[in-house]
Length: 96
Image (cartoon, rainbow, N blue to C red; front, side, top):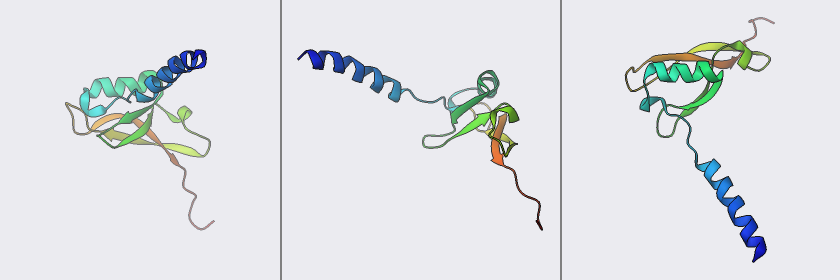
């Protein structure tokens, strides 16, 4: 019984952390979505009920061998809000 009393609160904490949802761009203003990316540097942002991606503020948030591409997401007040960038693999020059 004592084991259950110790394990149960731990399970509740883990379950609570798992159930926290990511921010969703369509539920916020464009400035708020862009502000989150800028403030955190890198963030996973939902863009719909089943879609999400990682958005970054600059190349320093990407892995070695990656570059950045501009990223736009739908928000409550703008269907194409510029929020920052997404990391993409650099392409190799043709013919090498």
